[in-house]
Image (tube, rainbow, N blue to C red; front, side, top):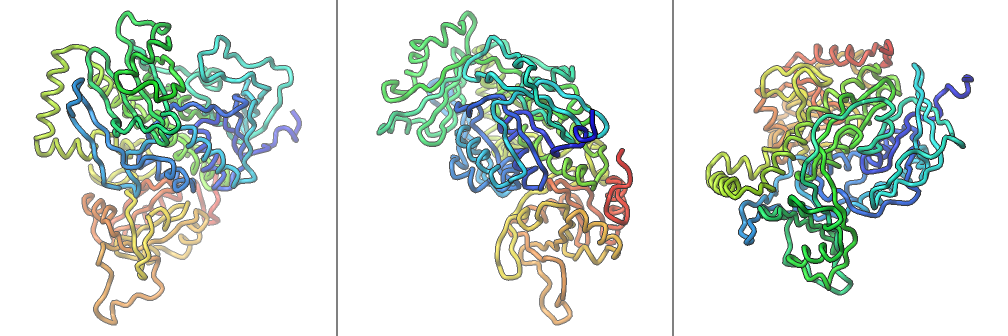
Amino acid sequence: MSKKTTEPQVDVVISGLGPTGLTLANLLGKRGLSVVVLEREPQFYGNARAVYTDDECLRIFQAAGMAEELTRDMLLNATFQWLLPDGQVLHQLIQNARPNGWPVNNLFYQPLLETSLAEGLARYPQVSVRRGREFTRFIQDDQGVTVMHSESRGANYSKPAADQTPAAKNGEEALRARYLVACDGGRSAVRTQLGIKMTGQSFPNPWIVVDIKQKEGENCLRHLPYFSFICDPECPTVSCRQPYGHHRFEFMLMPGQTREHMENPETVRAYLGKYVDVSKVEILRSLVYTFNALVAESWRSGRVLLAGDAAHMTPQFVGQGMNAGVRDAYNLAWKLEAVIKGRARDSLLDSYQSERRPHAKAMIDLSIHMKNFVSTSNPLLGALRNVATRTARSTPGIREYLAEQKFKPRPRYESGAYFGLPRTRRNGVEGEQLPQPQLADFDCRQALLDEVLGEGYALIGYGVDPRAQLTTADQQVLAALDVRYLTLYPAGGRPQGTLSTCIAGAADEWEDMSGECIRRFREAGHVPGAVAIVRPDRFVFAMSKPGQLQAAIDALIEQLGMHSSGQQQVAS
């Protein structure tokens, strides 16, 4: 291979233009990297799959510069509930807190979300999308990866295809990149070439998913205002409201029911007729699915990485399949930028799997528990579930645990598995994502934390200017990481009262108006004078005690492999 063809043409090739690939392309584009996305489907896939997103992912869309655009087409702060067959409310989730600066439970219509994310790529001339181009194979070496692709016959997403094999290799084109990220779904061709196995289980009972939309001029869905899990032992059902008159139903197939029977239009209308006037709605799609709970054994092989459904497949019961892929993209984007721009060793990418895989697996486990909670067909187990749930709702402590959704895995990495220093105590903030409170500056202007911090690393001083604890040489090295310096006070806690408290030339000073960050610092045992080193994805690399920042900075520089020039020492 000639030198011309071995030199990377682009920084990253992404295979697959679903929500994970779209999010990653937007994040990489915003960070200035050149990207080519290969999408086998020649035309946009216009059916909905995912319906739910949470505050953590809206925060990621904020980082991609897309949150305001996307939330315009969402139902924000949606109510979720569990119903008995007679309509009695077993439990409701009404969540008004905003620990990440955004509503916690939100519903959307996926074609609108994907369209907006795709349009967002137009902001970046160095990002291109090649529709109708299908990944066929790759060859990687120490300098990059050569991605081969050919004209596609389409993925035919609307129904199972008999032949999903790539088109013939005639007319193959080669694309040379530094890294390849496979966002090509549960049947990932990239993962198949790597020979990486998926472990887990498939559920024995398939479900039929039915997407409907009320007809023009109708207003026939107002009696279904909430997302409902209907705990009916004879037919477990999900009823999901969506924007602009869209609605989804999911019905579990019971023993003896076949795909052919359930997908029959008459059967579909009969099931829908229990909940809606079928003459007033349009049936957009009805399809039987088998839901999988699977995780890839490895997420990285050299310069090739797996993300989204290519790395993990999550059942639908807690709505975290798409969201897990969005989290993957966020974790990968800043690390790829750091490595490609020479700000970190290539080994930084090893932390992608060690950080993300346990969290993705925890979400899968939660989804399995939710599936068992909703879909039991045993009357005795169902009665026990109902009694236990009602008891929990009236029990202090458990009631708050449910109301605040503390059963959901936190954005907190396992000890010893993350890029950062070990936790100094069991409830330390190291390896945990900071909340995103509303801040206020000296002139009472308000902004969310991430808007103030920018896209790089940040040093947040608890009541102190972090720069006062740094040498000039350290500040020069940290400048290569686009470090922002922030002094954070509790609301109403700025220095005041006498001339001696006047501070000149301090770092950006902000008050934590909701108290989320300050509260978390205090819970972890920190006092004013402590400094948090925050990664670009807002996870805490280290939290130093007053006067001990130097050791944490030395550890950051060493782990990145940087020296005084701000560039990496070795590529290892």
